Image: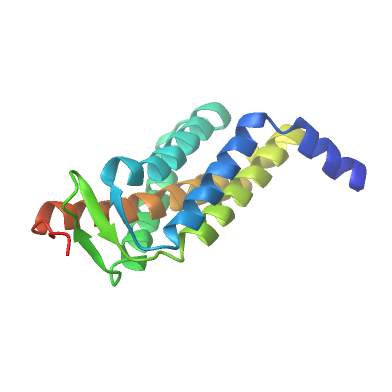
Length: 172
């Protein structure tokens, strides 16, 4: 078992570890209230969207069913992400294209869960690709990918809505 785990870790591409470190740092930063530029807030949703679209294009056959499953996951996740921070303190900041947001304690656990699921599915895909071609496993991979990307898209949509609809808050 230890040989298997060390083999998996050794054969994991460096970019995967870089993404993990980036997500951990973002998740830790999100735990503190801050004024953040919308461009920075867009990075995590973009990362998960790109990663998931890549997985769809490389590991799946794009069909109406595949697209529908992914879209259902994405929209469900977006609703969850929006609701997760709906009660949070968010206001438009005086800095250009920025918002002030209260601490977000949900980001780190969700990012780690999403990363873990995508990592495990990636390992399964590398070791036993036929496993993820089974209808149930394939649907799980498609829906969860959309779901996790959607959570961060939903949070970002909430931030953008506040930015677009709120007056600028002056530094006090």
